[in-house]
Image 1: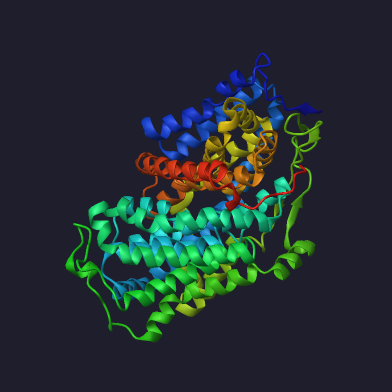
Image 2: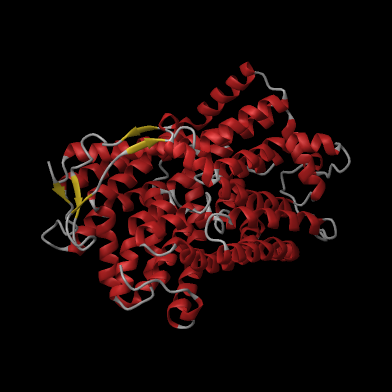
Length: 554
């Protein structure tokens, strides 16, 4: 059975179709922001609405709609859910062993100021986690660490969501940028140079912005020197690596440079006034310099050092190539039932009907979550945690995340269904038709919508990358501008993505409170999106030479 996507399914009207199929997006916004519905309820309900619209509006076969949703849900659980589960498991092991008390002490010894601690963990350290793992791990680990340091749950979650923006297009190991290159045919090095410019600009802003979010503008001014050190060092390293070496390493290298520069700087400078949360006690934020030996501190941090080494191995091309070729390291479902061979893309997305294939590959060894799980097992041996205790901690972690995993599965299922039904393409085409030469304003917005739908900048690139390129070519614009803007705007969608919010809630123990975080991050997402649009407009009409160009042929 063959079914062709029809992007103007209602009376041949693209705009009418877009308005109707956008109902799930409006509902999800309403459910989270107005109704304050729990994420593990809002996600599945929105998925059911999307299934109904796909069948009734697009006349998509019921079996194909359900199959696309199931494929997305399976993908949501593995590899994405697996990454989050293992990331929080690794953190929980450090808590169980008592080593996190030493980690807290080592951070407090650098500075008891909560603003500085947020810069160290939420900005610099989480950027490293984004570079090596991505897909929820940075927010999960960094937010849990802040909670362990004594941060209130809600500020910890919001701070980490805001801070985790500059490294996203380059993490894990450049996948989102490489996906945009794959979809459009624009060389990965060209995309990396363009995105590197955008992310360097954002890295200069985010450290100060996250402190403003945390304490307000007046108190944020007191730590401007530290914000500059963290931001400038990250921006310089990220720009250099993305310009000269491509998309794989900017987040990893820049985060390490930023962390080291900030640690060294704090040996010579501290805020004149130490800021703490009102509910902090003297004991909770007192500096603990000299309490623990260097060996004890090294052991406490060893799980994350082990993670760096293991993720470094997992990220090497040789290891990936070996696992890809060795059939016993993965399980392949080459033809996803009731979906593969059924859906065909149509014009204007493609010149002639083209099969939209569907398969699932369970890369159980090469998955970043497996690397984190192996790191956890090694860490258990180093920390002296036995198998029985480790199993108990793992089961506890699963119970902690069970509702978040439901939310993740349903949201990714929604994203896959939006793609296979044609909903994502309808919305993108409608944006292009309505905007014309103002399209650069909406390119980042399309990227944001894609990330809100799927929770992934990579998925947003896959959904809308070709559309961004084709529209730019038709308008006589540089396609690198619009494709990089898709990634740039998509990053700001991470702040309000139900997937990201579910991860943050799970990490800080606020499952069921997703709407509280959404209402706060929505404002910050819109502020940052406005900055993105201004920069994209400058690149389009004032300083176009700042961006590299791509080959003219599609």
